[in-house]
Length: 103
Image (cartoon, rainbow, N blue to C red; front, side, top):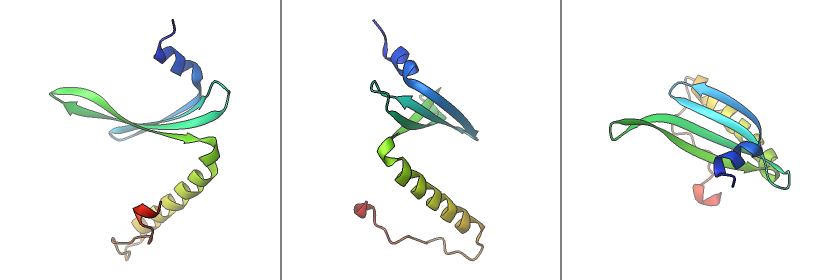
């Protein structure tokens, strides 16, 4: 019988790892049984829990029908964040006018 870890490894098509300070990001392309591809983005961070070092992980799944909208929005938000970080006169209370409830 195949365990879950073996099955997960078989579905992996491509992986890119980004080490960024205390965090590591994993960008994985995986395949469903029907050979549709999707992306997982995992943030892994070493934390102290009950005196023991453990890895805390957060994962999002991105499906092919959302690739275009997600990438366009991510790029727009990253560009805006870079603009705000480099603009010395920017107001730190900037908001886009979009409420969380609207999403």
